Image 1 (tube, rainbow, N blue to C red):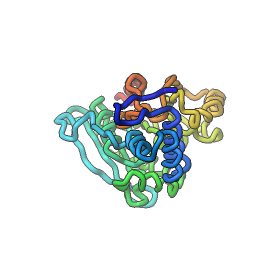
Image 2: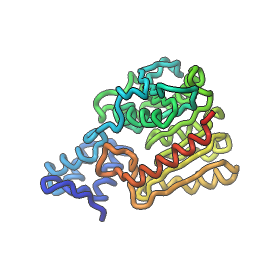
Image 3: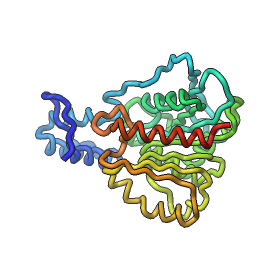
Image 4: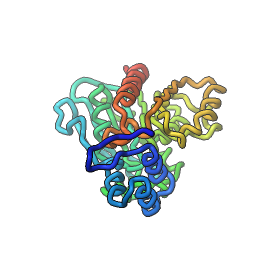
Length: 298
């Protein structure tokens, strides 16, 4: 059993705890049942409360970049969506241009500080980065992460895809963008990016981190170059890989699939110590940026 030893006064986070947390955050959303079951694994409700905090995305959030970085111009933007204005966070390299653009799609916690940090990292790699708030139609991402998670069940897949297409159109309208747009997303955002690749022939590259797979019948419509990052311990998401690969191969889609053995779903999220894997995250990032440089450079 894999454990993460976090100090004498804190419970070790076991793989069973991580699996339970994944089930809670992506399937059940029943916090009481989650905490009761976590208490059985941790030994007490007090230990369970500590473990739950350690596994939560924002508990240890520390940005790797700064909003005041002189190399970036940061702004909150809005653009027309399917039901009204979509809010977004735009990070643009200060010097040079025009540049290729990348849509950064959040997890099922909404547009939070971590995803804004990821958008700034993308911009520092030389791209115009837009992180849309896909909860905009529901009033935007709330500060309470639990409340944010509960909103995703109210989103229509059709509306989400349409708002993704709107993000592409918005980026293409900017003078400092070449017209080439890619997208990357994590967890819920990974599935959203896969679906956006089906919905838009204008997407040049799509990178999905441990994201749900689109329906096989939509795969022939994909024109983007795909890069798919999966976690070896992520049985829930990985169950959909064989059918997706079969569909991709059947129509000759240009794709790369990478499996990172021994790591968990959300391995790229550096704000969650229990699941973050630095080696896997760094390797996946280098591969992602290399693809964007190949496909989005002028």
